[in-house]
Image (cartoon, one colour):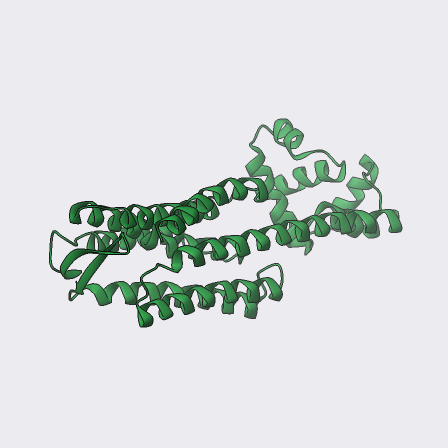
Length: 312
């Protein structure tokens, strides 16, 4: 059993490296999720080799550090993948709730609120905590169910609003979440001597990395498709000053700054050069560009050239 915990911990650390390799965008929530799995599995390993009750309690706290924050990171990762806009203060509020939950779960051996009583036993040489649950233990279950419900809610909302890359990706995420819920429920019913969640987490990581790989390929396809359209329809790659002047007269609803940015876009100037010429940041140019695209009901520069070529 100890060797199995050791293997799961080693694999969870390896998965962090794999995450860096597959996720080219280095999503912070994905990295935090994988790190929390490694922390959780390290706690399970330390608990299995503990020799004293005090050492076992500290190992249990390390495991809970990963377990408590893991659903938070998973929820934020799902929100990010679903392209759902949330209030900026929400992660901070959730982090405070998570910290409070962590303090409750780490109170074992100090206050009789999470565990009324706890002792150390050994089963086939593996250290096991024998617990008598306290009044606040049910709070942790409510906490987990709330997070799982939030994840499922986000995925359903994504499927209805079609904000994710595709319905298939949303369904894939739903299976990942529901699978972990099922394993957690089974563990609470059968009370096995081994923490199967340690393996479940690693399987979940593998599935999530698979999804990230698919999504990145999907985005590459979306980028290359407009380029093929440009070739087949011979859309111009830039416009002359005379053409641009005519185009500007045909477009209404743009601010003066947006018109300035549009001129550079029609000359096929790179965003960095536009920012330098207008003495602003690239982020500002990106905002103006997004506003222009929104007003013209387009999504990229290729579509812009297609639209304005018809106006010219």
